[in-house]
Image (cartoon, rainbow, N blue to C red; front, side):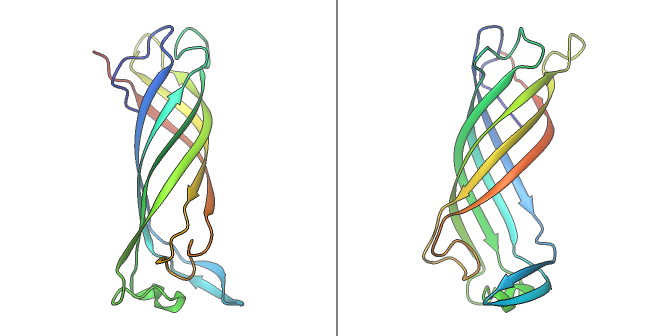
Length: 160
């Protein structure tokens, strides 16, 4: 959810955003060590990121203000017994953290006069998980990984 230290009124173009994400590691088919693992459960994941959003034409005064943004944060994977098959044993290494970067763009859909602090938004983000020599074999050990995120959400702008 976006939080801004300063209300984005007409002509103001920058907002600060903080986000927490959780992944529950549902089972999925994955290719690992030249074989197919069917229904393999993955580690739980948590990510904390912060970003700056830039509204080229301002956050208000247009019907659908658009923005571009970028930021960074930390993503953690938490091993569990089901991840032993893919080399991520909770008895050996219960958790691993990675630096992440994000870039993207989106549109803000203002709620209107009845709720001026609230809005909806639709955006796309490209997430970069940086390589880490201590990472599990299946995840970002030797190369940076990327992921795509498309989301629709609500936002609240704090006013002073």
